[in-house]
Image (tube, rainbow, N blue to C red; front, top):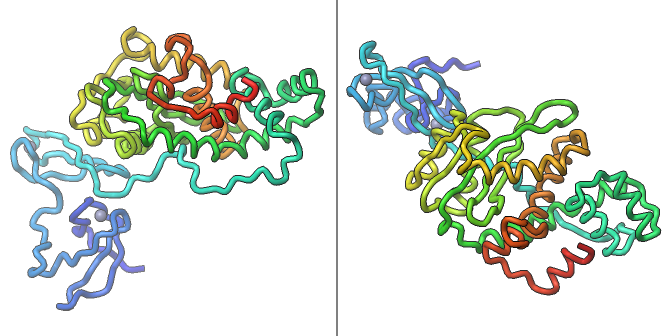
Amino acid sequence: MSIIPSNVVCPRCFSKNLYRFGKDLEGFQKYQCRMCRRQFAPDNPHTGLRQHRLYPVCPRCGKASFLHHDYTYYSNFRCSDKKCNHSFKVPKAVAIPRPSSHLGPETFTLKGMRHPLYIILAALNYYFCGNSTTRKVAYTLYMVHQVRISHVTISRWIKRFAPVFQQISSDFLLSARLCDSDEWHFDETYIKIQGENYYLWIAIDSETRLVLDFHLSKTRNSNAAHILLSSCRNKFGQPSSAVVSDRYDAYLLPAKLFFPEADHIRVESFEDRISNNIIEAFNNQFKAWYRPKRGFNSYDSANRLIATYIFYYNFIRPHSSLNGLAPAQVAGAKYSDKQKNFWLLVA
Ligand SMILES: [Zn+2]
Ligand SMILES: [Zn+2]
C-alpha cells in the first residue's frame, strides 16, 4: 500500500481519493485523482501546479479555508477565520452518472411472444391505465378476450416493453422545446422495494404537465438531486423562469449549479397551493397505480415499471386538466396514425 501525503489534494476537485501515478519527466511524483481523473505533480515547481493553498480562499474575507464536509459532487469549505466562519460549497468537476430512467441500449424483439400483439397491448393498457395488478389483468384478459395467460407472463411482457417506450419517449422529448416553459417542479416521494424504502425523484414541466425525467435511488440525499437536475439540464436546457422544489436542502446546490438563469423557489410541502398542485396531481395518480401493487420485488423491475408508467402518463392517459389531452400532445407531439394504432390499439 502506498501512502499519499495528507497535504496532497486534487487541484481540480479537491478529492483526496488519489493514487500514485509514476514520475513526471523531471522525476517528480505524479498522482491521479480517482474522482475526476486529473493527473498532477504537486511538487514540480515548473508545472505551475504547486499549491500554496490546498483549498480555495474564502470568497467573503479572502482567508484560507478548510474542508468541512466532502460530498460526492461538491465540497463544503469553511473559512478558517473564526470570526468570519463563512461556509461555501464548490462543485467538483466530476462526471455525474445518468438517472435510472436511462435504461441503456437494448434490443427488443417480439420473438418468443406467443400471443397476438393486440392482447399484449391490451394487458399493458389495463395495467398502466386501469391501475390494475398483473393478477387482475390476467382475469380481465380471460373475461374480455377468453385467453388464459398467467400473471407471471403478463409481468414479463410489461418489463420487456419498457425499452421500446423509452425509445419513443426520448426521441420525442429531445425534439420538444421545453425551455419556453416557465417552471419545472422537482419532488421526491418514497416507494417500497422488497419492503425497503426507495426514493422516486421526478421533474415535471408546469405548463404541459410532462414528466421530464425521473430517478430511483436508495438514499434521499443531494447525490440523487444532482443526478436528476443535471440530466434535465443536459436534455432540456433551463426553464425560462423558475425551478420549484420543496425546502429540502439537497436541491440547493444543483438548482444553482445547473439552472443559474432560473430562480429557485422553495415551498413548504403540501401547503403552498400555487406550486404543489402539479406535483400533487402526479403523486395522486401515481399512488393510485402503485398502491394495489404493495411494493415492487426488485430495483430493476420497479425502475422499468415506473419508466413505462411515466410513458403512459406522458403520452397516452388523457388529463382532465389538459382538456383531455396527454401532456406530450400539449407539448406539441405529433403521433403518426401508425404509432397511435400501436399504442392505443385497445385504449
Ligand atoms: Zn479530482
Ligand atoms: Zn472568511
